[in-house]
Image (cartoon, rainbow, N blue to C red; front, side, top):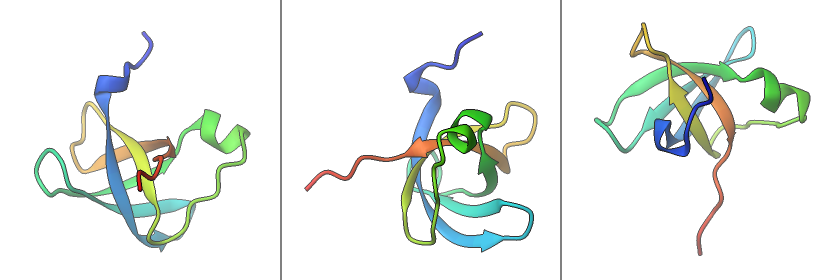
Amino acid sequence: MNPTHADTFEATVVAELPQQLYRLEAEQPTQAVLTASLSAEARRLGVHVRTGQRVLVRRASLDPGRGVITGLALRQA
């Protein structure tokens, strides 16, 4: 099952946690704070995530407080 673009949303990296985890603050669905790690594909492509960056996140199906970072969000000027 391939995730669609509708499954992902944008969030801001608030903090870098140990063990390659990140605390994110989502603006869209409900102003949620969640913990996420990099997806295997993002890690393979060498995506580097830092505090303050906007990222694309897919929420975990069983735990709404967890997610997977699928890539960096494109900035619109």
